[in-house]
Length: 226
Image (cartoon, rainbow, N blue to C red; front, side):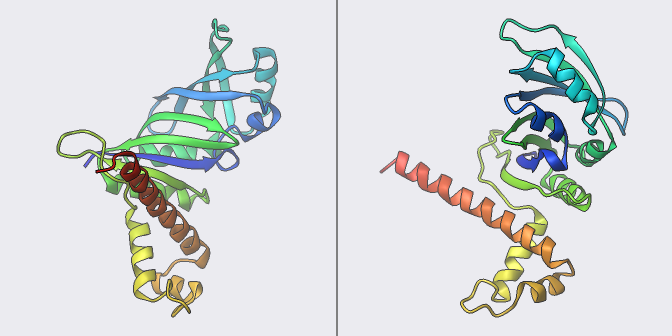
């Protein structure tokens, strides 16, 4: 079933960290991403609150940017439009998305965090892409995930990826959430054959998704009383 996910990852682990650090007032939004074969992508990016004379030297020195080219002069709103080509460090994350049939619907940066809205034909491809990105040492928060319902509207509740489901279900079965705990994080990680750091991250993200669902449901109930 077609799945849309909103993911968050730091600029330091993906792209343009140095540019954002050197130009803290800068705002950026990815308009679209042009695929150039299976190994290269070229994001088309709007930059705000900066002029080209200040932006381009920063892009030149940013190790995650291989090439850049201005496509439009400053608009009436003062924005700049550029085509970028990522260096290998950032390109690896993009390849994980595209190699699992993912599509970038939207991307922007705020407070040194990338927020990506991605579309996948099936939830399994999303889970595989997330796992592949994490294998590159990048930490990801899945903020929201929705699936197309029978009415073809993207309105169903958020869901966990398969690794998150496995981790949180096993943690519950083994008594990790009991007081006192029946099993330690290290012991549970050994049961799942992953590192305790990876398990800790997986449980944290799963708990965040579930908490977000509950808060959204409670807000909806308050907003629409019987």
